[in-house]
Image (cartoon, rainbow, N blue to C red):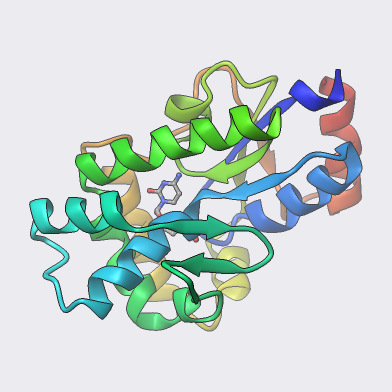
Length: 203
Ligand code: DC
């Protein structure tokens, strides 16, 4: 029943979610969804439209209206924003957008529909095991030392990464936390292949 397998991956910035989710999706023949790219797309549209990221109602409206396709490329309302959403402006704005409960409600609903439409999948983010897919077949919470994480996100800068993690972990709406039943993995201590085989054995 490969098709119905769900894997939830959470963890802070630079903890290795993208690398592991790609490797696991390939190994298991599943689709992968990067939910961070969805929040980044909303932040991009908010910046594009010159909206104040703290204006909750206006930002929620942007989220509701924005068509987002996340695959190898990220396309919002027909514009390819794959590179743009990794830029410093979006990285600095995305935590405020993601702290908005109305934005989260829209994103969570779309993520669950994506899983239903794809018959399972590997989904990575901050609230996947806790909110989006609490009944996932395997829940992983990735960690790595602050030094390792900062090195992986050197283009963003250690301070900016630390600020984003602080905001993502202390917000009221679905803060980043270890989900109930999650297995905690230090990605600085094992190779990707080792972790993949370990996770496959847990399924
Ligand atoms: O995974 P990432 O660094 O691209 O995520 C960008 C931001 O989006 C992150 O700082 C927090 C937010 N996010 C979230 O709140 N919930 C998710 N499921 C995924 C990302």
